[in-house]
Length: 449
Image (cartoon, rainbow, N blue to C red):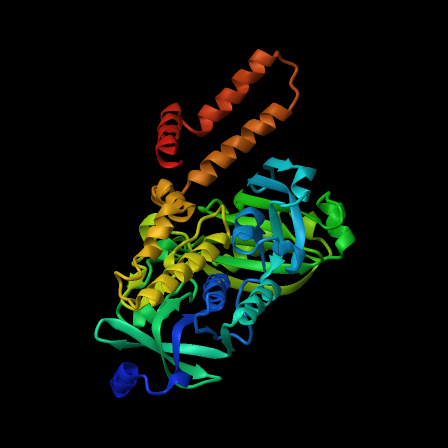
């Protein structure tokens, strides 16, 4: 009731905009990479833009470590690695298919990946986001840290600004608002514009940052100074539940994480913290982390529902970007968020130039996403999340079979190679009937693109 009265009380302010100090052309809510990208490009174009961050500084509420892909990022920030606070150049990419006692390891390593324009860097989000936000403010954006957007100001079905608390208080109006709040677009939900995301569309990841001396990381991960390794984990990292994990190397830290859908955690009554503790004790992973000191331990929700879980993202006077728009896949990391921020900025600039920030006037944002790899990739693989949900033991069944086959292939028997192949095939069909193998193979071809 109180918020409704506030909205009514300031409707006249919204319409007349008498106080120019409380009006911006664009207000961006959330200073993650999506919001910063949007603010950066708009500020470069001379737009009066306000960037709100509820934490003490941009990046303060992010999971510390992550990866930035060079080729797409340099389209937004050319030659960014020359002054950005990047950590290691990733030259070794591995995937481990885990059981509780073994792993089939797939990977690729190349010194070619250590040459400009590189491929992938590890970054600490707390430092990378601050660096990027400084670029936005240097371009002319106004950044308010320690400010929380409490609610949207609306006039009829049109968004007209936000009500702010913290460093500044009260209503602030805008020609349009861009929401970059992360996985939970709470303001849009509170305003009745979106429904809360389904639990099956969100995964909960838990991460631990572990300090280790640089030379020990180099030795254990078989890399040279300044170079790094990333290991994708599937299978026993989640005790066989559908989900993924990873190990990333930084200058003097190693991060380890694992994630499972919120719906699965609730259904199976699993504590994800115990899954991470169990993973750290795995006989092939424990030696990589031995002697390290935990410096950070945190959890984060990530939208992983795919194409069908992307909500409506364009409204009268508002666009939604990044994680809040469900624009996440496992390949591109934070780059989808950055691209959505850029496209939203371009659409905002066009709309402001035309004086039309209605849903129709902002529709080019969705068109830009559809024409890019961002939505094309999500659309191509739109059936994958449903396939996983319908086959909850998929990882467990096949990874166990693959590891058992690899074990048999590794053992040396006093038999002919033909007889040994028969033993391996017998193991495979004992684990999974031929009919199931055929059906799953056909479904994989149909679903994965």
